[in-house]
Image (spheres, rainbow, N blue to C red):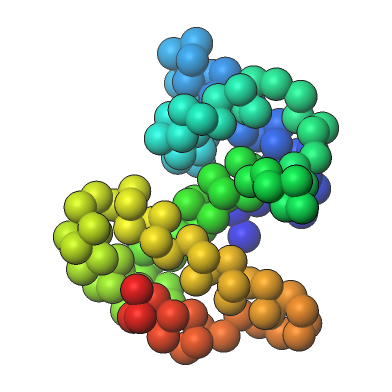
Length: 138
């Protein structure tokens, strides 16, 4: 796992990486990945630079920018390691079809989130076969 479980720690990691990127400081490879995802989402810059304790309510129609960007990072990690096996090929085909890697990630995010939610609710590891099936249907 590339991140810890503590929400405050994770959000601070995003803010610190973005600040270092903005200050043109040397970034670790993980910080560079985080900064790239933040850069890809200008609509979330205020959240990263603002109140890191803020709650984002689904009931209030809000998207949690940290969760969204974390799912991007998760997909990028999966594709780079081809885990689950076959995801890199699916990603490449989807990116070609939708026009960009970033748009392909957006298409994949709901599949990943659904797979993670199911695993959490059942207290089981994520079902990689079900996840790949979801991705194939995109």
